[in-house]
Length: 133
Image 1 (tube, rainbow, N blue to C red):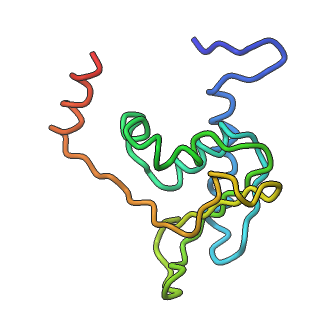
Image 2: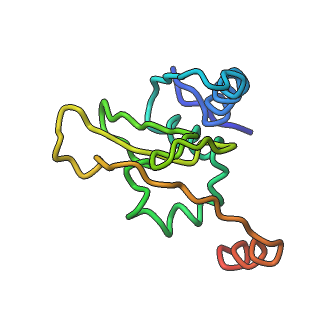
């Protein structure tokens, strides 16, 4: 059962909307795509496109990736497949930068950095689950 707040949508509803835009974005190839949305949707999109591991990883890296997890109003998060150093294209969105245009000194502002994908073995995932239980 999925709960939907009055006059709102459940996280399941939101995920369906994200899934609907996933394929068209992937098919856009080398075209630029701009998505304007709420912070929770931004987080879900980043997770989907980058396969960023478990919620456990995000908790452990809150300090480093907090600006992606809790974006502020009007924050621009730029994801790219293109390596900003050498111009080579990756197979997935690997690079991120952020700017809060109304506050150029904001802590969410950052230059390009790589988002590393964490890969787990079955044993490592089982260990995470057992810790959480």
